[in-house]
Image 1 (cartoon, rainbow, N blue to C red):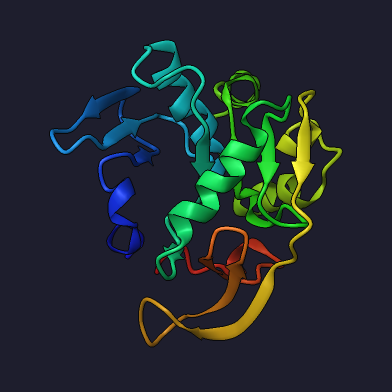
Image 2 (image 1 turned 45 degrees about the vertical axis):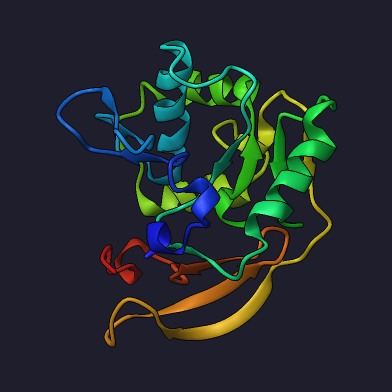
Length: 204
């Protein structure tokens, strides 16, 4: 659903990070998209490990911005590209290495550059597995050393709050998800309110 919702301008520019794989590897496909395979299983923190592999292999440009999102997202409308490009242009000549796309940094959704990705990869690559509760802890506990919000790089939180859209069935008629809108790039994110590990169904 995420890939189907992508603007046409991004159809050949996206990277998929697959986790809990047999080996670390990557492949560049004919349409331009890249697939990365890592042995770690770290939820969204696996992005740091996977994308750093591409930076080290010089498969992607070293001065690139990367939009770190989850597979449980969906782009809305036609202005996602312009909104994202405007943010990149605004911050490219700055020292900012992580631009959190909401006031709270919820779900670790951000625009990010090489310095921060390298730092995250150094921290996360030796960790083989994170529980759901650990990933949530690092998301919200900004002072935890495994939280990307604690990285020693320049960071900024956009002064744009998350817009709650209520709960609804997204992928099936069994598990409702909370729906929020990142107005900064016009993208929806779907998630479960998880207080203990058993709350999460770990499936669409």
